[in-house]
Length: 485
Image (tube, rainbow, N blue to C red; front, side):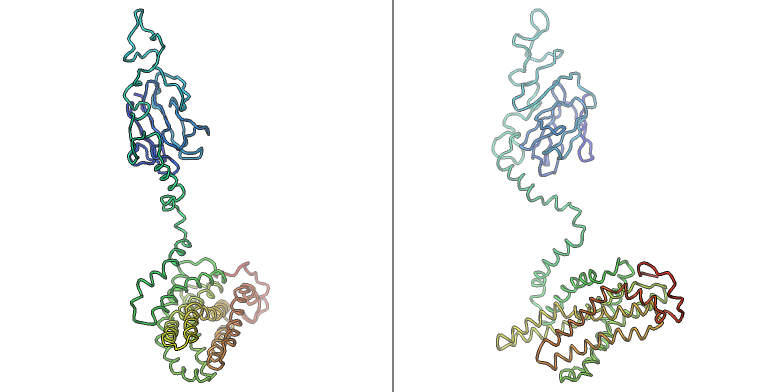
């Protein structure tokens, strides 16, 4: 037998003499090559008098050892590259070499093969003096050797999906356009790309589509709080990514994820069960410019955000003997603040939309729209900044406990006072500039702690004031980087 084994893309195919093997992108090819640079009917392999012959059919080319070829006899293991020298590779290997080892250099104008001397063909009878070539020498009969298709498809053969009556080995304009389209817009290649496993690409798609999804799903809602809640949830993950980049808390493992989820649940429950009820008793006094009432609101809301951080830190220390890095607590504090902001924004965005709806002049409508945008994009960010600062102090207090409660009180009080001043300035001054100044101070504190957290912790570790009464603490070796202990 003179079988041919073809290996492509890790799969092996075996073909018998007499079979015609088609190679290309079409699904009915014997060997389907999905690469868009390959022709739809790229090549064929056929059995002839001298063995297996490979012929290029399509517009795309074929290369052997970097050189373009049109035809080649497969007399030994051969590797061919389709479309380009770096294209998909076919490995061809005859399992039993044909008797003839004739050399063939093919091309569009190459002379056809004659039969081997030992193989008389129909139409070539023996001359009077024994076997020998006819007067004109050996050559093929008018119709070629063997059945049509030994060296190519029969005349007029049309590739499936082709146009008109053109032969399969000449791709038309339609095929060329399909090939060009698949090269320039390789959708199949994109869908198989491992790059989809990267979350950033999926995040970009989600953030591009979500506003349209909101329109489709929420346009019939009768609650004014729905738009603010939806868009607050939309913006919060972006702020969380920004905080992660600023704080650099390190790797977030399963433990940190569980703690974060617990913090979100705690803030949600505590806000509606406790915080809102206390604020309701103070709101009128704050609107009348009472600073102490504004300060009480500041403490009420900052404790709401700081309390789950403190409880989580104490639980981990008590039951798991685990201390998280100060930066991690700072990042988890921002998550607590974002949660608080999302829940609070529902009320304020509802008020802003009502102001737009009831506006009698353009300036009132403009103010309502700007207030809505501020609440959606910045309100949660402000709460996260304050909560991140207090969480930094909680992290220091947990890891270095000698002045634990004083440190916690200092951290919560700093942000509570800033929070109270911010609320008081809104009701007292007919200007946004005092609030801008307070927010600038808050940001200075937060970003300062993100930059110097490790340095501050090293100094705290060295100082007996925070660790104990003995100066011997100064000579203890300190780790290069603070982390879990």
